[in-house]
Length: 265
Image (cartoon, rainbow, N blue to C red):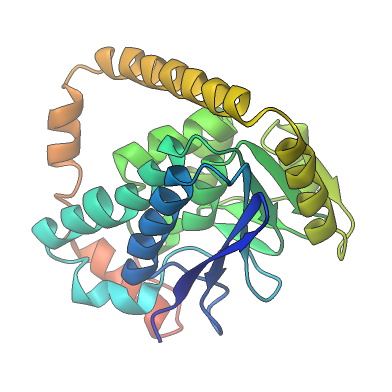
């Protein structure tokens, strides 16, 4: 079972649901591709005015499907293809979708989940939701494009804390830091997300799309400005980003997780 991404339509509202039973909706390679297709499908429809991105079974997304990792992560070319084509293909499709996106965050919002939430316009979480990217325990860094995305949404200090300390933060703290719009009691997240989407859907749809297009251009200009300050160009940065693939600590981190033991770095 590699998990699935479902697209459902309900009048002017669409729901994109991450489904990976038993794995807290961890994203598989197939799911990244399905997410890309779902985002493209939503963007092409003129009758959809708002999208709710949600996870199935009380979790948003616990990260990537680590069980798949040994098949490709230890080879530099395959690792680059995974991040630059599969993962970034899905995230970029969300970022380029000019229909408003509401994140319905329950439970775990870790790693890939944090990246997915960072693509959304409005983020609503339950009180017990948790946020982080503790991939240092797995022996690898965040990919450059994904790092820029999450830093833009969550702030540099928060991202440094998550990546360097493997910090996991609760919903109230993430709201205090400006990542979340609202935190609501458990059991009320779905209703709050639906009501938010309905409010958006009742407003002028063309104006919403034009606002999102303008915000996307602003985001891209900010990112381009940030990239221009890097000594190496963005191309060189990405080209060099996956050289760690065959490293001992990368293999040890992933292997230790799969063997359910603490890594020895």
